Length: 394
Image (cartoon, rainbow, N blue to C red; front, side, top):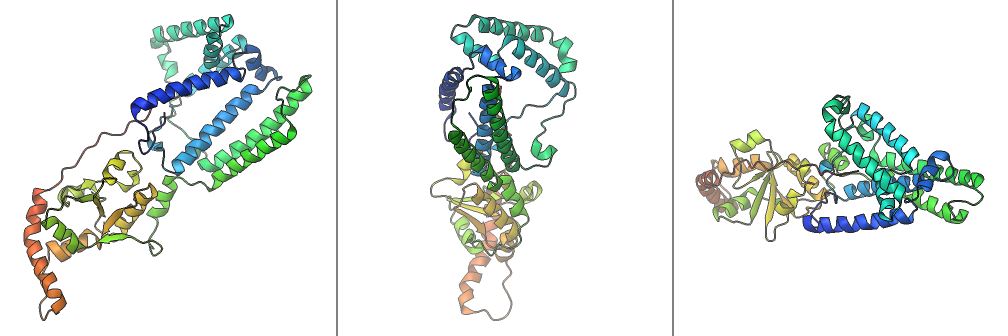
């Protein structure tokens, strides 16, 4: 299962759901005719393009689904595993795979599907696959140089060709529609009866739906896109923020209010030098990570984001809102104002307005008591385990 944010289902339930999805996938694979070697190799001989339709549809569904889940912050893209590209092993492995597909009539997945319903040729194919795996394992020291040659890392179209994922999704949907139209005509010209037994109106309706889905991807922006916008913002007049003043923070700390949860979005060096009681050091660009769900969503908790300046606080609050954490406060004026008004308070000389006498009296008291309280509750730099990428894929 995907690395959903937040944890919508438990790890144990994920395994059960994965098993059920696997059974359903195998059933649909067989129903689509993928247990027939004749239908599978039809793609290479140009008389049956079912394989092309199924795999392109699967690719589009997965691609659009991931983009939409990422847009609504329901999946953590940072921990999705991407297979590294070893160029030469990919070329050699692809050639062996393609040759085996044409000769044997199956790929590894479809051979299991066909063997499960008792086809002997598929069973021999599975046996051949097992022998090939065994040869590779036992001969790995000999193949290792080729296997690891030309490691290109984890290239993606978005970075390699500077094409945003939603635009590529749109282009891929258009390519699929054109491809489906062309192969349907080829099948009808080459076969006495069309392989795809659907009317032109039905195909046109499906194409319209697919085109609508593809077009919608042009207007779907990701969390990373929103972060870039937030980083460049200087005018926040269009937004309303929940604020908590330095005096209220001081009062709550003197009363040892346990409902306060401070999120420090400064640098690690600044955090080590000084931090509010039990604060958690954070990079607000990582608020989408699933671990923050347990920190922000605590009943009866007042979450306060602070930095040296209010601009950084507002950016952090907007980043938190973008992933669904709306009930977040910022420290009015930032930590600099808290130091000036509370920790380093100097009573002004000259006459004092009657309305400010109690405030100044409180600040004088707080400037003496709070440094000790803050020092006693000085937070430690919490080293959380780095989130691991989710392994998977075929």
